[in-house]
Length: 411
Image (cartoon, rainbow, N blue to C red; front, side, top):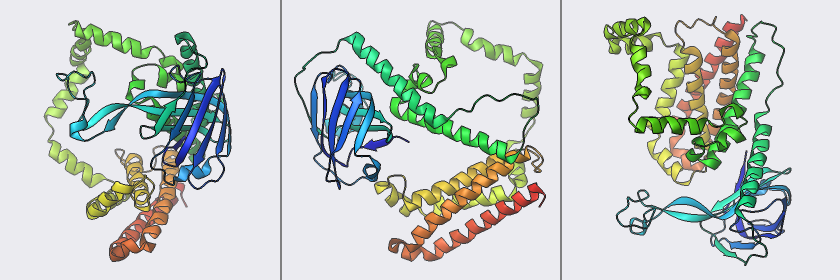
């Protein structure tokens, strides 16, 4: 995954005074020697041809910094000092997007600020980036200037670099000869699930960089390699314009659907159903293992409210409590998907269910490891009885998963 640096930086410099080459140094907390950067390509037009020097007024240790190799050679990503980001502020410091007092506020206790954004792709660490509004930044005069066409070309090159990096995460398999037979083996499903995980990870990386704005243009589709979707955002914008012009075609599909016999029959069926009875029936028919995992997660979320609140205030997303709850929720969610199908009896895509259960075992082991950390933490000494109860319930879920795997495999 991408490596983000910000708090660990003491000071740094980026030099793009030579066309086609960005050099730089980063001094990090806990490291004597600076990280040396040597990249092909140029920055965006605002700092292309310049030297940028920055200092962090409040440096602190950051775990990501320990994995950064001392020498970074590769290709530039987006490098700019004028990227707009929304920053939370005190209410009296709020600004409007246009500066006009009559305009709506940008958001509750927030304002737009320029951020320093430095990104590169290296063989040593993959995608690395710095994004902050907190540094003190100075920019030298231009030694050379980049025109708009050159900047567009550089941005396209950066998109290709992002696309290549994500392709390494996705690892698309080579097409296989289709012999007409469906492979329902556990191994085949596991390969498919791993491919799905990698695709999800890559998509999250793209969304994290380009934000929701990237969903409305072609950037995310391009870097994900979804070439068949390129231009789709423009089609959607065109459809939206048609709707704004008062065209009723956007609602026509609903009228066509309502006239279909299948739809009318479904409406009649739903009209005669008691939804409370349906929900009770669904709960009664839930697989016992699914119910056990769901109830376990509900208990975690309801019996640790103060601990979760305190943890959220300082969490980096990877505390022992974070991992314990996250892995437990993964188990519950996946069991609901695999065992929650109507009339589940283990005979429908057995290989898929076995692959899901294998993953649930891995999450259970991760949850146990996190729970053990909590039990050894002095801050949780007054919660030992509760943690032991959680441990017993988690053991019961893991045993249930193993028993179901044996049942499905016919052991």
